[in-house]
Image (cartoon, rainbow, N blue to C red; front, top):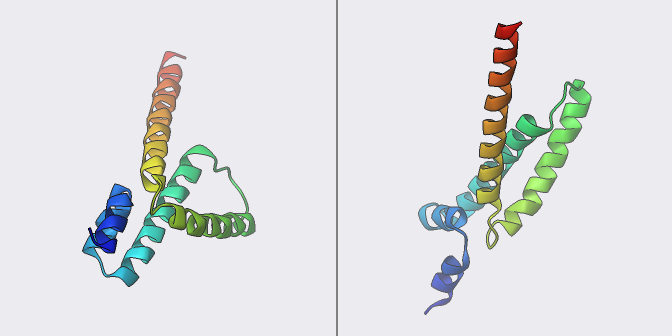
Length: 108
C-alpha cells in the first residue's frame, strides 16, 4: 500500500472526494469554502440575531477563522458531515416552528 492511498483511506468521505477529484491546491480551498458556507448556514439558522453591520462583520471574521481550523480537522474527522447534520436538524426545527406559528395565527 502506498502512502497516498493510506492517506485517502484515512480521510472522511467529503474530504476524500474533493482531494481525489480536484487538483491538490483547489481541494483545500473547496473544503474551506464548504465548511465556511455550512458554518454560516448553521449560525444563521440557529444563532443569528439582528445585529449592526459591524458586529456581523466581526462574526464573519470569527467564522472564517474557525472555519480555517475546522478545515484542518476535516481531513480526518467528520466536520463537514457534522455540519450537514446540524444544518438539517435546524432546518427541520425552523419548519416546525414556522408551521406552529402559522397554525396559531390561523386559530386566533
